[in-house]
Amino acid sequence: MTLKTKLFAISLVTLFASATAHANQPPVSQQPAKVTAQQKAMQLQAKLANVQKQVIKEKPELKKEQENLQASFNEVVTQAGFPKEKEEKLVAIQKKLQQADPASEEAKAMQAEMQKYQKDFMKARAAVMSNEELQKQQEDYQTSLLTAMVEKEPKVKVWIQELNSLRGQTQ
Image (tube, rainbow, N blue to C red; front, side, top):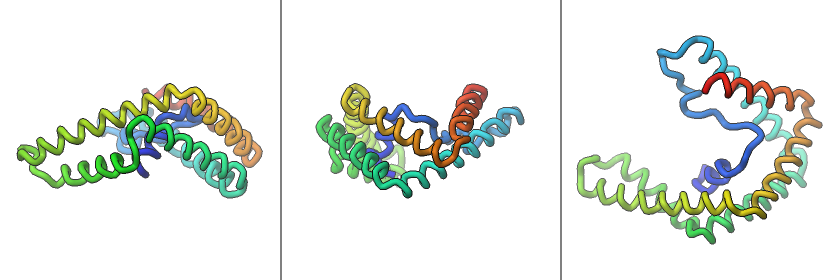
């Protein structure tokens, strides 16, 4: 998943959230009820993701709407100063930094450069969040997606409600 795709996912006020790293690897000290709630949430997310994938595969117009939204998103991000080249550079720095000695001068220079790119990334994220046209396009897509998902699997709304309830319990 590219950074722009991640930013895109972050910027959407989604119908359901993806599992966090903490949900995937709960601390040993967690209470069993909380772990069970997180596991149930992950199962619901998997069900929703599966229905979403099927719907997008079956409905070319929904796939096209998704692609148009992604293109609009990419345009806003690029205009905000975070083109694909910066994304690729940030990813390369992150990979290189993982292999470098943290105390080395090279690592310190890479960290400084990475912070610059991360600042640009945050600026682009803010541009996405404040772009009313893009927000409207996102809302329209979400409505279309939810409608198609409910048509495919009527339990989707119940799953979303359960997921929202479980997220409240695990936080």
